[in-house]
Figure 1: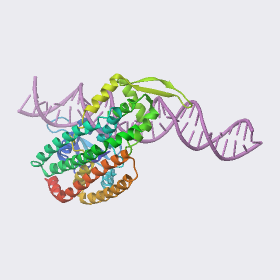
Figure 2: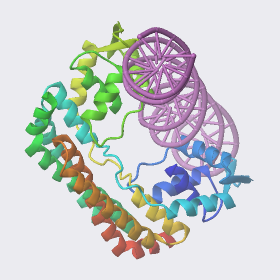
Figure 3: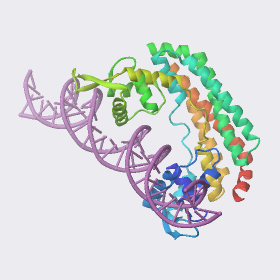
Length: 174
Length: 174
DNA sequence: CGACTATACATGCGCTGTATACATGGAGCG
DNA sequence: CGCTCCATGTATACAGCGCATGTATAGTCG
């Protein structure tokens, strides 16, 4: 329920309506995938259903009607609980790269060619992100750093996989 | 449709039934989250609906009835298309760590404490994975490498975030 | 009328949990 | 020894929830 928790966090400042939450989410988490409106309202419904938020009324000041949502006591408790948690560090290895290498090896053995193409795309993207870092807000720089570190991790893994993929291929045949 | 493509890859060897696909998936992608049976059959239905697989009959040899699925010509085409693709390298920065830091900063400013706890958990998990590497199959070693590289990327980012989180906090207030 | 603000709804996929059905093998018992 | 019974393994189906996308609707402002 990660999206719900982010919305709870935004609501912990003050009551807000759905449209505002989407805008703030995209602003506070620059670089993240923009929230779709449909998702915001669906998530707000769930939060209300679970008692974490409540509708405190509708406001209409020079525009369409706005449904104002506020965090409840239970919501604050849930938010604190979530913040006290940590992410389970890679409990499973869900890697799209690894999956594609395995499937490519199964289906025809072109994993090496795939890895080389992927590496080139990664390098291009890293140059883009590095350029963007120079002209971003602190939050944008932090977000770009996160992406860059993980793209670099992919690159290191790709190098390893290129060295070992013949071994993996042998494994698949067995 | 990533799961569907993996199933197509497994079916490209020979026709198989659902139960077998689940077992092979978990074996070929060690460390990955085991596929739930319900997901396998639901995905097979979608593949059949889209013309990528077809039911080639039922077999019953000393056990319950088995529905055998085979890849079609369209399925092979789709599989080749997917294998010719590359992953979009981090088009968005969807980071649970970053989201939690931002929300923590919003809700009370305990991001630093969170980052320290997360770092400790990461280090523990990396020791586990490193130990597991010593006694694994080549595929398991590759999977563990992937996780280790990305946990290390998280660690580097955590260090950066710890240095800069006061800056981010100022940003949030503005 | 077009652009922006604001919400609602339908749909599809991922994922979990549960129910069902059949077969095999072993424990316990007369 | 032969029988029931039950646990286990094999195999599928279905209900339900959350995430995500796309589309429709409706009001307001310039």
